[in-house]
Length: 335
Image (cartoon, rainbow, N blue to C red):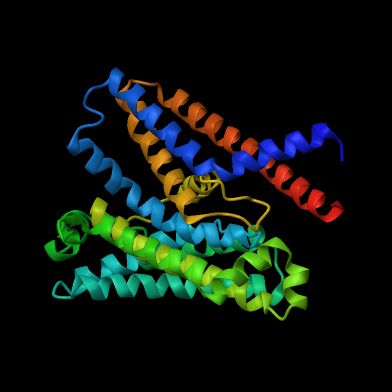
């Protein structure tokens, strides 16, 4: 290997090592710039609203990270969210005395079933994830319109206890944020300190080697899609509670924002790599962009272009990092 290749791989390794720090630095610089343009950006009220609005995105990003790490993709999460939220909303309207925790469990179970079905198609029949999830997206979205008969569930129909899920607090922290924190802590432990968590990365890094080493690839794939479905169902209840409205087209296209948060956080679309800390920062960055650009009077058309450009840069950085990591591995083998 030439000196040029060694230098290139060294720089790529440094980028990989300090990626999260660089992303955090970019977030801080961006926040300062926006604050100069609009002094209301870093107020306690706006920060609280921004973090609350990002909570659901960050919850979904955890599940999507696991799916992408296994070289998959799930385009059905928006439809799963809508279906779970709609059924939960209709249930609390018919049973106003139902405890909010039971409504959350109902939505989560519905999403879990949706994820299990999708995971079964991918793991059992080997259907490409993008094809399977695209098909199930239409199925789940159609079911949402069927169970709702094309009607909305509005705020005045929902009991106050259900709407309070999104506005209440635990230990002084908004419930949505607290749920997101709990999910991140549990996910961090699951990924880094359990055998199954390590197997997920093994399957994404090299499916053939994982299979030879005794890992049940099908079981791992079924598991990650089930987790994604459960988190989508949970998010459906939180979404409907937050916006006090359940509609057939709820969260349509939201899966692209979730994937973008993962990519911004350094999750490799090629599979095998991704960190919880990166996903958190990616979600925060996307939340800041969604909040800050309107505050500084950026045109909606430019907002989409700016977000797309940042995502493209993140993808290019991921490609450079992956190439550098591969070169480092090759160098070590040749030494």
